[in-house]
Image (cartoon, helix red, strand yellow):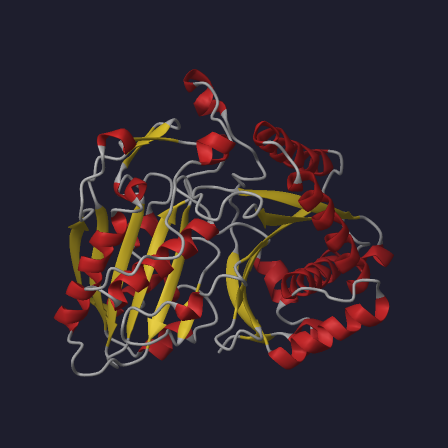
Amino acid sequence: MSSVSRLVSSVCKKIIKPYSPTPISLRCHKLSYLDQMVGGIYMPLALFYPKLSNTWSNKVVSQHLEKSLSKVLTNYYPFAGKLNDNISIDCNDNGVEFFITKIDCPMSEIFNHHYFEKHNLVYPSQVINNQYTYEGSLAVFQLTHFSCGGIAISMCLSHKVGDGYTFGNFMNHWATIARNPLSSEIYPISPKFDGSFYFPPTKDEDSSNVSNNNIVPQREECVSKSFSISSSKLTALKARVINDSEVQNPSDTEVVSAFLYQRAMATKKLVNSSSICPSLLHQAVNLHPPLPKHTMGNICSLFSILTKEEEEMDLARVVSKLRKEKEEVKQKYKNAKIEELLPITLEQHRKANDLLVNNSCCDLYRFSSLITFPSYDVDFGWGKPEKVISPISTSNPPIKNMFVLMSDKNRDGVNLTCSMKKQDMLAFERDEELLQFASPTS
């Protein structure tokens, strides 16, 4: 047993079932083509809340979460089902796993840790340690009590069930029900799991062969670390872009993604003591709109930019290329008919894959932004979270060259996590230009 795992003093497991049985007509949830493409990786999110008032005893907190979770699962019924190969989910109301743990250290010791070994304590260990063989529920939860009186609520959701948009909508829906247990308040976005209508699945006999290296990346030995970019530093980065490019309204995602990509390429060049290595940036794109906001599942596309020459590493040029590609993708989907959505999406993945295949020794950097997800609004009835953490993944090792962006508590800065090979991370975290704008989280 490691010194970190010794901090866990108790673990209790429960099964939470939907409050109301799933209708027969909804018992078989067909996976969409995009659901079939993604791997079964579990997406993690943890919310940390400071010491609660005395009315919130450990038992009361647990019961409060369990009851509201049961109610929200009625709307998110596939979460409580069982995956049937790569074809469908049997929405049989088997329920989801809900763990309750106690950790013998203050909450700050966990979320102030630069690396993620201690962070993993707030996630169900079974998911983390059995990423590829885990046969538990498609959504797994953990309530963690700290010695200081604070708590953490974590969730790991199988990507087969949905993407970050689905995840975020679920967490806010759950919190709304928890805050108003006796109210008939209707959550603004009532989910519909109808992704297969927009992205029809492949034939049953071919479903096991549906995969894409852009969506199911290979694992390598990597380390993960977190950084933050304050409001003032973000403003300074934007000013640099505005002064040197035609993009006069760069978004947080564009600026931060471009900056991190630039610094990763620059430090990799130093590690290899060579000229720039051809590099590819993949950026995930949420398809709400054009799809209805209530449509859940994997409803996303991607676009890519290629960098081969050193002069292309200029921050303003990278932002301009990102904006150009993003606008082209948005235009493709804007007036697309329903039957055109899947071909357009597959073409985006084919283009990205061709860029990777046609540029040997190309470094691939993946970016996913949750900046627009109001994670700091998730209030279960005792106030908003002090800290929200979304590591790269619950897999071990994590995905190489993966960056996840989130807004900070004040919504004017950006928190990020990234994973790289150890030698690349050592150079990246010491990069002077990076550290002018990004601070290691501590």
